[in-house]
Image 1 (cartoon, rainbow, N blue to C red):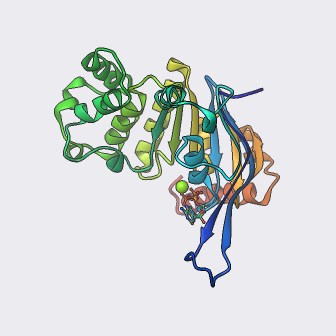
Image 2: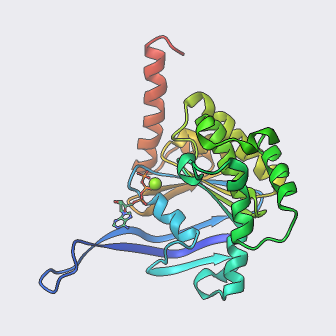
Image 3: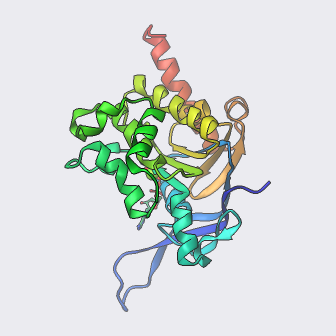
Length: 269
Ligand SMILES: Nc1ncnc2c1ncn2[C@@H]1O[C@H](COP(=O)(O)OP(=O)(O)OP(=O)(O)O)[C@@H](O)[C@H]1O
Ligand SMILES: [Mg+2]
């Protein structure tokens, strides 16, 4: 089955150290022969320890970085062979949510203006104010928040606003890189629930990236495990939890269980 957004055989290496004719170049292999697909109406998870290459994968999927080898396909078209019109269409069809909502929203602008910005920069012709009101409601907030500034909100509220911003152009794919890791545990489930509802209501393709297996297991139906730049295992969350095959998956499961066992041991369960 093919996806709306896909990586095929993608590898990426970064050159290390200074460029000098006296130094032999050395490279850090960050991704090796990665295949990955995001499908319409489905939430897929990508999990792996810090440094595994998750953010590099999202940068390649969003077209911020060009892979050394392999292809990025959007709706079957190679991202790096698109003309300007196709590239613009791709950018409209893609929403990105990052780890820290404070860095994706301009602190000097009321949030309503931040929400308008993608419509302006990508030249979307519609009733902009009506669209802002519609989207802020879709993320469970009142339009009275639009005149307020980022510092007036909690992390969870700001992440909702950042999600609203990502939805402004009516994307069909949403990529969320660690969207809840900067939030209080008590707020994490609310933001994940919102993302899950949006997948259903808007028939989105969602890629959810996290270093915590329980986060992706909660919110997605298929999870890939990335370890040292390779996808080592893909499966349904329950399968991965109950029968982890790779060492990397076993370590991720143990990390979750250790936390639960620790809490239970302290009488907090
Ligand atoms: N521009 C770059 N130049 C050199 N090395 C880089 C660059 N970007 C990332 N790296 C290295 O590539 C590896 C993968 O980084 P990446 O940010 O993709 O990991 P990650 O899985 O997102 O980690 P985290 O969970 O900490 O966010 C790391 O070793 C990182 O130091
Ligand atoms: Mg990362």
